[in-house]
Length: 396
Image: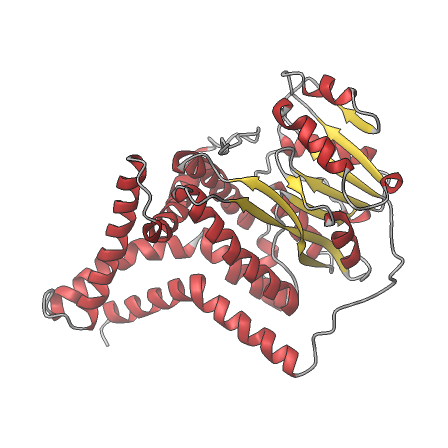
């Protein structure tokens, strides 16, 4: 084989492993553990019912306050054991004043706007319960979410529990909504298997909980607070577990432009997180956690999108050597790439004209899932990503 062929197959393998291969490998590893009888869910004390704090860091969320408070107070858990805490730093739309009207809601407000993580760092000093549950203001929680989260904390080795993010979908969903929904279903499956193998690698900010004693103050310029907080808990020797029965539900991004804005921020935060969590790359120290972290997160945020880009000219060069229209192996693979990206382009074209062809949503969403990695890297290197809230507009 020529050097070009070796690079092609190596790059293709890494791309395949990142998006499909790891999922397949994880499935078989979990199956083997089950066959060997190594998977024993920890039952613990069935009467375990600790006090919890439902913590919401909010910036200008007046449109969601009433629904969120009502939802929080309707959850199936003894209300005398739930502290409702909101930190509304920087809000100037009346959010703090609205919250003061609700009995049993503790509000901490600072007029200065320093970003979400600064609000979380400040608010954590007021948490007195052994478990703190973080949730976003614009999400509704399933009625049994607190119970389902607490149940996993019966195991003393569990330091963090991630709930499931669900996307409200409609038959008329555009690419942003349909693509995001498909993506989160795929992610949820991976998280279930990750948790069963050892640990989830990062919690969903819409709903996750930690043991309060394991909280570590996070750098004030952190972009992905949920990711950093949860993995630093895992680096202390605890696991992050996942319970899809505890869920937060929200509407999808209003359109692809808004979804792209959200993902660029996540990509910039992902690159920042990989740099900030560099010790976790040491597989000799962290073992399975490092393996899962690299396979599930690091490759997606760093190497694989670059290899996707490089595969196009390398494949074209090999196809030209073989005969571009002779339809040998390399030419077939090249035309397969062309067809995939053409489908993504057609999806974009139809999206802009409000036409819905769902078969095109997957290639389209895959493209806008990887494009932000390059945009996020540029933004991160230029220091242009603000730590302040930059919420994407959600659909109605």
